[in-house]
Length: 184
Image (cartoon, rainbow, N blue to C red; front, side):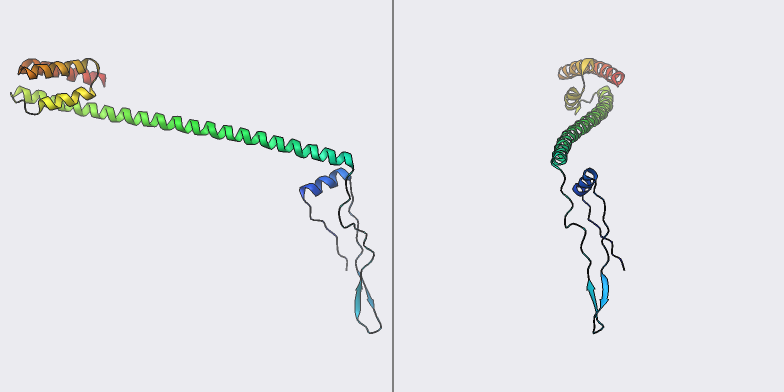
C-alpha cells in the first residue's frame, strides 16, 4: 500500500512554492516484513521528504516582504475608500431623509391651510348672520398659518371685527379666502 505525502498549503506556502520552484517528491510506502514469529512489523523506508519546505533565497524573501507591504498599503487605501463611500452613503441617506421630512412638513402645512380656509368660510357665514362668537379666535389662528396678502386680509378682517364692523370683516374674509385658495 502506498501513502501519498501532502502538505497543508497556506498562502505563504503557496507563494514559497511558486517562487522557489520546489517539486513534490514521492515518499516510498512502508514495507511489511515478517519476522520469525510471523508478526508483521512496519519498517518505514528512508524519509526523503523534508520536515519543512525548503527555505527561499534572500532575494525571494525580500520580494515577498515587499509584496506583503504593498498589499498592506493597498488594503489600507481600500479601507479608506470604503470609509469614504460609507460616509457618502450616509450623507445621501441624510439628504433623502431631510427632503422627505420637508415634503411631509409642507404637506402638513398645506392641510392646515386648507382647514383654515374652510374655517374662514364658516366664519364668513357666521358673520353674515350677525354672530361674532369664536370668529376672533379663528382669525388669530388663521394669522399664524397664512402668509402674504391673505394674511393682510385676515388682519384687516380682525381689525374690522374689533370695531364691530361686520360687512368689511366679511369682505376681507372673502378676499383672504380667495387669495389663500389661489395660493394652493
